[in-house]
Length: 154
Image (cartoon, rainbow, N blue to C red):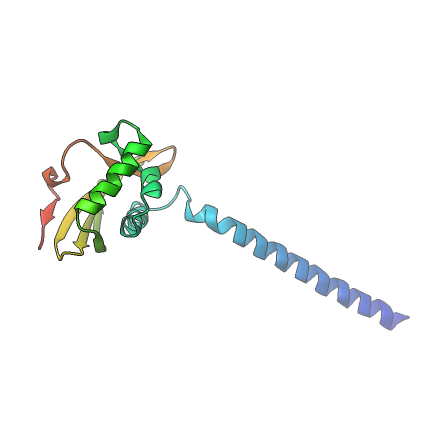
């Protein structure tokens, strides 16, 4: 009788450990998407994700993370124009983050070096603002080439 009780205790311990481990794994799996879109993402990491979306031509997701003053909050026009820009201009081939400057609680500028498929290389500042606690790219009505940090490298 004592042996049977000992086996039941061992089985209960194993069952408890398995249950706790399973719950932990489920919590981690469910949390990962929320952590990826966390409000604590750095400006540098946000710009990397933004430029990756550019490389993939994901215009709808781009529209979600850009505040573009040129289109008066008209999402459909914005998406159509991004598609048109991509057809007219050469696509992003590669990019580097050179530095992050002017970081405050709700604004930042990330200086990038973007290589295009035609071989051109530009140093381009990407201006960010926080909206509802999340970083967004802010595109104003002025030209990016007018910024003091913009330059054609090649």
